[in-house]
Amino acid sequence: MATADRLDFTPPPPPGFLRGMGLALLAHVLLVVALTYGLRWNRDVQPVSAEAELWSAVPQEAAPKEVPQPPPAPQPPIVRAPPQPEPPVQRDAQIAVEREKKQREAAERREEELERERDKRRKLEAQKKQEEKQEALERKKEQQARLAAEKRKKEEELARKQEQDSKKLAQQREENLRRMQGMAGTGSTAATGSAAQSSGPSASWGGRVQARVRPNIVFTDDVSGNPKADVEVRLAPDGTIVGKTLVKSSGVKAWDEAVLRALDKTETLPRDVDGRVPTSVVIGFRPKG
Image (cartoon, rainbow, N blue to C red):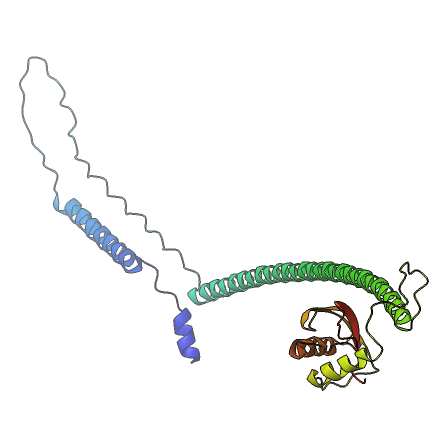
């Protein structure tokens, strides 16, 4: 495995190395051939001399013979030694270490950037959740305020209704009191008529009405106390029930509805002892009699 690692890190041979070596050898060979040929040419060439006789009236001295000069020897080419390359294994190892260092630094920078992005995203999400929580809290407060306002309004309406019912009940009590006084033979203190008694129903008529209506009441709920439901009943001359109105609730809706259903089922009420029936009367009904 170590040998394979070293082979992987061994650099390829420098380009042009073989070509440079071939050119250097060729230059040396040419230099040797040129030197050899030049030396042989100098030895083989013999100087050629010639003699001539010239006759002239004035004798002239002949010029010296020219000795041919050999051609200059060619200068050998300057062969420079190729530069020694750096140890490939050490340089490649250094390059690999630097590359690995740069890659590690780049990875660390990317990781730092990603961490900053994650922190930024977490902060934005936390801020968004806080804003949503604040909005939900504000909506809840608004809803509670609205419910409280509606509750106060209902309580005020209920109080007004109870006050109206109380006034109406007090008025009905006064009317009943005057009617009872008339039935007893004495007029009320505010009466202006001249008759000895009012034309209200007799004392026994209310018992006969209860005996007629109560068997038709269907009510099985268990209620606390004995609340009373007052119903105004309008009658025809023959005793037929032509209308009914709940003037005061008992506070138990099921009992009020049971009384109204019983009056619908009864349809007619009995006549009084004098054969007459009142045109309108308020009758109270209690669950326990």
